[in-house]
Image (cartoon, rainbow, N blue to C red; front, side, top):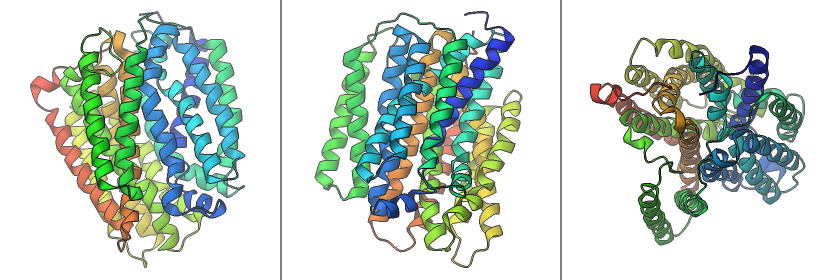
Length: 455
């Protein structure tokens, strides 16, 4: 491991990482508040407009691990900077889009760029910090991911109060270019020179694409037989991929890391939590605007207590994770998160703003208590030379969960049931309770003792 960077260079490098990570994660959630506005402006249905979210999430899910593996071969900084270039250009294209198809295709390109950033951030942090300060760097990134994931609606509300929805994408360009300049000047380049397995990367991409599209097809009236065929195909390809990956020393899909029980349990809990988060974030704006008769700007403000509570609880939970088992903290956080979702599902058209906001705060507080210790458990359980794979899998778990959450909303809306948002929130709450049970599994001494601190 390197001895880290000089203090001033380290600060500039970390500022670039934090800016880029926040931009990438924000674009996973920032669109949700304005989705009804975008659908109306581009003359698209609510169900079709969800592809603006899914296109970004699907592309990210497909590209994260292959780009992580490619970065090990050609260098972390190269992939990171290329990702920033693509992300900035795609953001400009999004802001200029005049149709749903153009916007969706631009979001695909944006997802590729974001994957270049998110696949490299954990590995780059290992280059920036000394061994003694490594935990601080990892904690800062985990905190940035958690808080920026929750801040999307609030930032969207502020931007909408000043201009049209296109500004949400246009503002990415100057910040993306600033992060690119700082990265090119202050981030060191490094690579483990491991081989890049193009065949396995392609197999992984096809498997993930078929899997997510098949699940997502439930929300678009896809033929049941076709959907089942897609799931079976994805399962078969996944089996072949795992068998191939077991034969290599540094697998693209980290089957070696899944042999570490706490890593596997933490990834499972992360996926479940982000299904609930994305299901709530995608469905609530429609409910607040159409049932509670609030404007898009008011919607963002009503959701604001969620990110505020997450911002307050996440750093405290991170400190507590040094003293208390991650299984307990995770279970407490997920139980509170679930309670908040159940309370939101019980809202009626007569709900006051205060009644909405304190429920949002419970969701955000629980989410923050869970995420910071869970992210730390994922990264610290992996050996140092597999840091890139652990970081890539952490982001992949988040994105798969968010994609499945958006799919849940699309499927529920397509059924034309009464009160669809309440049903989505209730289902998300049940799933979060299940995730709390998964978190408790980590209290088993044989699992908790498997943590491998960075070395």
